[in-house]
Structure formats: C-alpha cells, structure tokens
Length: 330
Image (cartoon, rainbow, N blue to C red; front, top):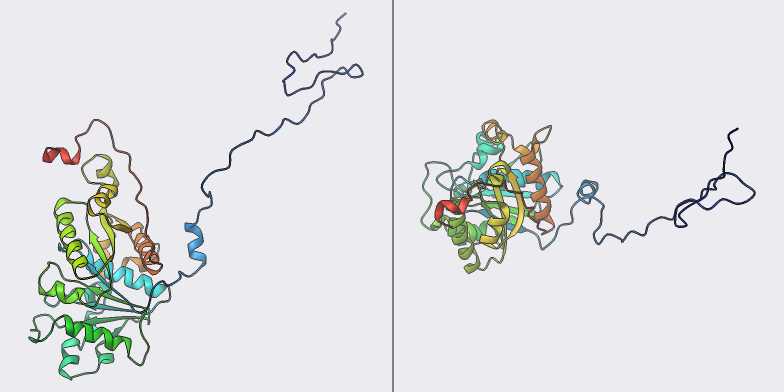
C-alpha cells in the first residue's frame, strides 16, 4: 500500500512555506516584488504628444530667417518651400522671399510660377504696390511668396542689402499685419547676392549634405554669418543615407555636427519623392500619405518655431570595411 508523505520545504528561503501539522499540502504565499531602481530618464514618448498641441512661438516677430549653404544643389530652395508650408500649416503667417535673382526656382517648387506678375523691382520702381507683388498660396492663405525679379531681367544698380532691409520693414508695417516668419531663400555662393540676402536676417538655417565639398563651403559660410552678426545658426543635414553610413561610405550626422559645431535643426533622409514633388510643384509636406523626408521637414519646422534643436543618433557601422577618411589617408 502506497502512502503519501507531507511535502517538506528543504530550503527555508524558498517561495513556499514549510508545512504545518494540520495540513498535508504546502501553503503558498505571494513572493515579494523585487526592488527595481527608478529610471533616470522619462519613458514617455514625447514626440507623439507634439501633435496634440500647437508649438509655442519663441522670439520676437517677425522672425527673419535666411536659408543658405554656400554650395549649390544641396536643397536650400526645397527646404524653404517645405519648411515654409509646414509653418503655415501650423497656423503661422509666412512670407517666403526668393532672393536668387538670376536663377529663380522657388515659385516652381511651390507651383506658383504662373501667378508671379510683379516682383520687388516693380515695387521699387513704383509700378505696383507691395501687396500686388505678394503671391498668396491657394492651399494655405497664410503663406505668401515674393520674388526679387523676373528671370533674364537686370536689377537696378542701387539694389542691395539696404533695399532688402527696406522690403522687410515694409512687410512689418503693412496693413494686413506683420508676418510671423520671413524666410529668405539665399542664392548659392558668397558674392553680392549672398551679402544682400543675409543683411536683414537675424537668424540662419544652414543646409548641407554629408560630403566634403558641401562641408567646406558650409564652414566658410558659417564664418561669414558670424562676422555679419548672425549668431543664431542652426543646421539641416540633407540627403542622408543610413546604408552608406553603415558601410562607412558616407559621413554620419555626428561627424558633420562635430566638424561644423552647429546646433542640429533636422536630418532629411534621401527620398526619390523629392524629384516628383519638384516636377509637380507640390511640396513634400503636402503628400498623403506623408513621406519620411516630408515628416522630417515638419519636425524641423516645429523646432524652428520653438528655437529648439535635436540630438543626432549614432548609426552602427559595419565591421571590416574601410572608413570614409581612409581614402584621404586618415
């Protein structure tokens, strides 16, 4: 005949208690919860909460921001169009000035090329009023475009930084009200057009790509901006490819930030939709569904409103590959 013995706890530190004489089965107790240290950082995702509120406008209005780079083809005009419309979608009044006299392209990216009848040259000559030269976007009525001159036209000899300062002052005093942002699309290079564009600005957005030629020009432009008295300079790194960064064929955003020493406003990934949106005159931020580059421009506009910056994230590099600087003997 089989007999069952009561369970005895061999380990007094076990999660089970020892048996009592009145019971042949063990009595279970609730194990104590381990003491975990509190995290030093907040685990809440704050980026999801941004869309539940409107960003708080920081600084005095109007905020006159020049978007420059030094090197051509890095995305200044694309940045001006997408950041400007993002600001308008956030509820702020925006005037975008295309300061590129000879190679005007901002109206093409916005799809407003057929509506530009008057420019600043006609305003200065007395042929039209300032409100007639401003082209209002039909999609967002609080966004307006102002072109300096028409293509293949000659500027008057007296046009320069003082004329652009007068234009900004006229926008401040107009009857419709002072705009919240005045974005100036700066031409490439560091010649007279560059000096004219940066004269009325009190802050700058430097657009660059992670290549050596663009970084050399960006570093030169940063020094010129600081010499002109513009201390608030933020950087947008455009056309970033993480696959090339992992393969050490492209500099990372951390490398770019270390070389230029500027606060980071946004990181725009490489996106083939940029070419399609440019040809259609339909900026990326208006696409539905949104693209990665369009969302990055919206986040950059959000940080611009609150005068905030972002922190670059390190991308893990693949082993056993030659580094980018190894081609230069580094």
